[in-house]
Image (tube, rainbow, N blue to C red; front, top):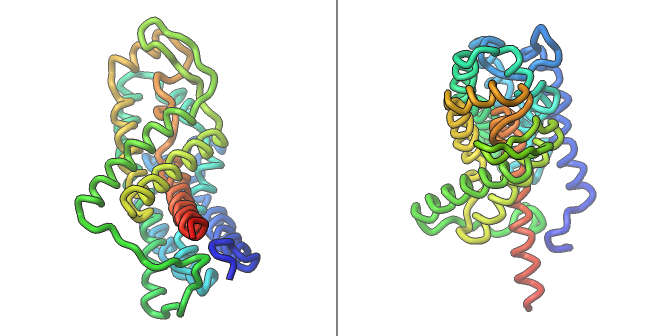
Length: 303
């Protein structure tokens, strides 16, 4: 046994689970969110019917269920990545927020847009949660026996609800700051807002969300011994929070009067909810296991 080092077979299983989400789920279901404009941004408002959302939830559950067996005997640990990977495929192909601003010229339209985006994170998270439920149901029906230390160290739980609350608050704070720091494009000084920033690319947004929520998960695991569930839920709070903050009429009017459409007063205002949730959950799971690996390495090196 090589401690926390992943074997080549385990790495293949991780790749297979990600491929399941991207190739088998994310790509075939792209027509659910395809717009008349192929470069348009992926949003729920006006583009995805309630029926499609319901179908996506069911399919996400099935994908999570299947991912458990693809990742066997580590399906409970690996399978949770499948559906977020499918959502990330949509997020990567999506148009950007600047494109939405172009199609919503009036200030009132932009306010309504941000307000509608303010609840989208809940739906995207629910889809990811459906996949998680599929994994957990599969694990209950056919539990795997004895996952090795490299993937499944002895279970540790937070000692109290208070610890969980602190972990959640910390995850939200760290992730919000991380998005602000890393989801950046070109910046210019502004006499009123101090700084305005250009629309970041999808690759930059993916990097920012992965790092921000990965760091949040690492910290809450190290200091509160908390699960990746907390930073994963934090994706919803961060997404809903920044979209509602972005709907301030005074700031929208100032930006419309003084800057091109592809500039924003805060980096997070240029990030779509699906991008925060999908890449954020993947980052949270990755950051958690990096923290587990770091703790294992530190414990064994001290002996």
